[in-house]
Image 1: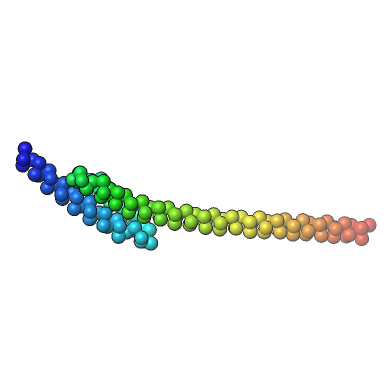
Image 2: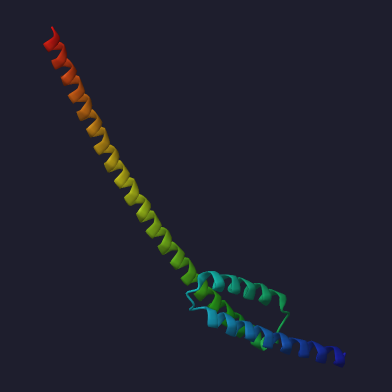
Length: 130
């Protein structure tokens, strides 16, 4: 029994070291602006976290909170940045729609005006021919 528990404790200590290393890496990425690299790295860190086994119970909650805080901080910034880009893109699309509608209205006005000119010219020529 004693050997089993010593091995289990040693494994949990190793798991604790690995999880702390992941936390430090996640914390180092949380303020980056390289969104593609950091997002892939954070997803890998999260997957690695799941694959590491249990840690000593007295450290479990503290390291989980620290890890979760780093991940949430990064992904909150990431989503905020994506949402601001989407708003900018939507504003551009809306501006283009307004521009196209304005151009379309002007074009229709020109076509009507030229149709009226052609009609009146045709009527004038007919009168002259009679």
